[in-house]
Every structure is written in C-alpha cells, then in structure tokens.
Image (cartoon, chains in turn purple, orange):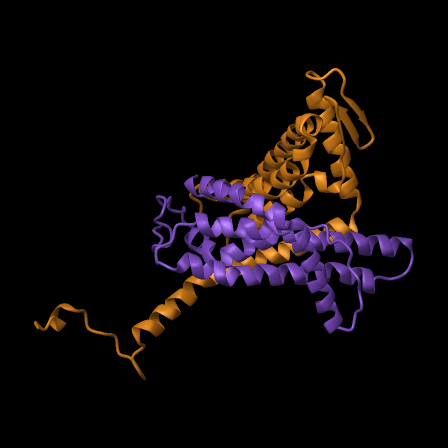
Length: 170
Length: 193
C-alpha cells in the first residue's frame, strides 16, 4: 500500500513536467520513428503520433523512485538504464504501429484492419512499457518471490514494506 | 587468527575451479531472475494475443462502447434529470463528451488479464482475477468519465491535463493495484499440475 501511495505521489508530481514536455516529446518521437523506418527503406512522414508520451516515462521514473532499495545507487542505475530503454521502446512501438498500414492489403476492410492493428500496437506505449521495464529492472524483487512461491505451490509470504528482495519463505 | 575450519561442514567434492563469490552471486541472481523473465515473456505474449483479438474482432470495441454508454445511462438515471445519451454522445451537467474506443476500459483490462494469465496461479484463482478485475476496471472507468464531466463544464482549461493524468497515470496504478491485490489475496493452494 505504501509503495502504491508513493507511486501515486511521484507520478502526480511528474505528470506536470510530462504535460509540459508532451508536445515536443511527441514531435521528436515521430522523427525518431521516421528515422527507424527509413533504416528499413520505408519513407514515411508522421505528423502526429497521439500517444500518451512521455507520461509512460514519468510513470516509470515514479515506480523507480517509489520502490524501496537495499543497495545505494540501485535506483539511479535502474533509472539510467530504464530511461533509454523506455525511449527506445516508444520509438520502436510507434514505428511498429505504422508497419501494418504500409504492408496491409488493399481494400476497405484490409485498410481498416491495418489501421486498427496499428492503433492497438501504439496502445502498448501507455499500457505496457512502463510496467514491463520496471519489473525487468526493479519490480522483480516484488514479484519474483511470489512467482517462486507459486512455482513451489505454496502461499506467498506477506513481506513487510522494504523487506522485499530477501529470500522467500514458504 | 583462529582456525574455524573444524566448524564448517565439509565442502562437497568439486571438479574444476572453485567459483569465486562474485561469480556465484551472479549465478544466483541469474537463477532468481529466471521466473521474472518468464513472467514478462508470458505477459508480452498475452498482450500481443489481446491486441490481435481486438483487431480481428472489431465487435469487441463496438460492444465496449455500447456497454459503457448503457452503464452511464443506468448510473446517471437517478441523479441527473437533464442527462442526454444519444449514440456515443453523453450530455450531462452542462458538459458533452463522446465515448470512443479509448474511453472504454478495454486496454487496461487487457493489460490486467495479460498479467493474471502470465502468473502461474491455479485456474480457479485466475478466473477470479479476470472477472473481478474486469468488474473493478469497468466501475473505475465509469467513475473516471463522470469525474471528467464537472471538469469539462466548469474548468475546461484543466480538462486536458486531468484527462491524460486520470487515464494514463491513475488507471495504470489501478491496474497495478488490482494485480498486486490479486497476488496477495491468493489463497494457499497446491501448484497446478
């Protein structure tokens, strides 16, 4: 509960700079995705990506800042590794969202399907990227013991706050 | 320095070089991160499956919009006399909003379902998570839309920020909370065969 409240607090604070950065960030995101597609000889001009960036980056940083750590520098390391990963994910996902429109078949149904798939792929930015990168870098200490307990078929231990990451007990 | 070797259990026979503590720690870390990586892989695969399902069956989206409108109609009925609901348009309290696919809880529910399905829990408990999670996210989404109406009516300049903040940040925290609550409430159970 404390973790969630801390996440909410940090995310609320970071939402303001994220809103302020939103427009230039999305322009840069569009240019980055254009460059990525150009590497695959696809010349595309993206006017507007309409993705909730960089709120996903703000949420990732909020998750990192809210997570209790056992070693000094662990949080900084996660943020320094995670930020480029988040930005790269955004660029790749937006580029992937364009691909169905480029490769989709002809006809109204096929075009509508390709547009729908592209829009859904882009939804991965707000709904998936922050949590996946956080779990990979820091959240594993919260979910890992529960996963190990589940694999052993035992009830997960209820860790006191800040005790996450220690050896799980069945 | 006293020799405490007699208190130590005898080391098991080993072949080759003794692993250094650093290497041993790295091995332990790699071993303990394997379930997490497996979970993440299953989660991403389930998410991709959800995206493909939503693409192949566009009626899911239509149904979600229609059901959201229906729920709003039911919720608003006893409180607001002037509420008008036509198609996907909602007018109430001096504000008017159009409910589109992004306003439905489809994507957050898909994210929660992907996490629940990716976690190695008994199927009965997974079913509880899927149903309860969908209901909670549905109720949250209706509350979110209703919370946006007075903002739109009285402080339209705040709408963009609150809309993005409520939909992105708070919704993800709600999804995360649902998943953590589902994990923590999991009853002691035998592992699935």
